Image 1 (spheres, rainbow, N blue to C red):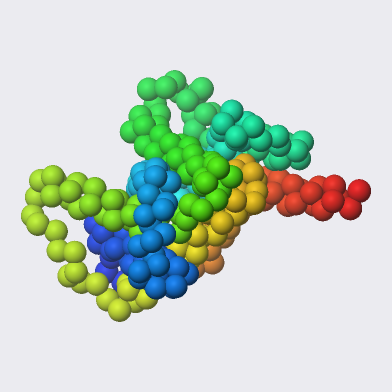
Image 2: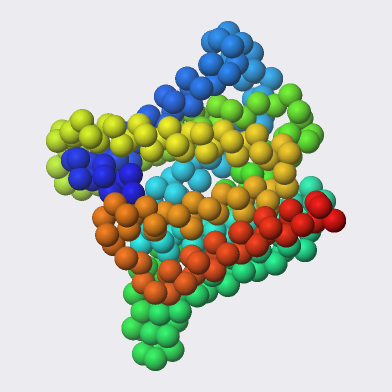
Length: 291
């Protein structure tokens, strides 16, 4: 929704992509300085967390860039549904790397999340079976790899945060977003200059509303990222990713409320199935605690 409003206030794919990374880096840096207790203490924290931050930042670049291109190049609802496979990857990684044992309710919820992705793809699958693979949009099938791999990168980042929290408790990954955003911005800026055509003006035509929606959206994602790192210290990776799936469930709702764009019936069914699975997971968890 915030991306659409930024476009209405003069934003283009290029300006939104560039400035979202800059603002994200700035907000994360400010948050890191405040929580560390000052600039000097932040540098001390960075020195003691260098290894963990380096790996997390590399994964963060994959996540941030993939998330941006998924929303820009694909239908947001479909992109979110493919990204929602992240709990499956987190569960596999947790079992193989961290020896995590998942409760049955979490396993069932992950299976339902996978089914919801298949439900969203029913129209495409029917078209393929009816007209053959040649009738499908091959470019879109390739682009779907972006949210697919973004979900895998998100799960890996969560697993790494959990690994650092259990093996190296002194590691602070709060400023991961700062380095990841700078890296993503550098790659994005380099890609702009490799394109043919006139030079792109990254400030022209941007209205005040653009900056307001940009700061608001990046403040939300900064809080999102920092919360994820802290949650990974106390919850299993798959559980963290399942909670984060709420974004996929509610994003089409915000787009509908703001712009009146109604998703397809299959997309609504898939999102409803995902939301019911998440709610059922939490209800089952409360009953398990009371038993």
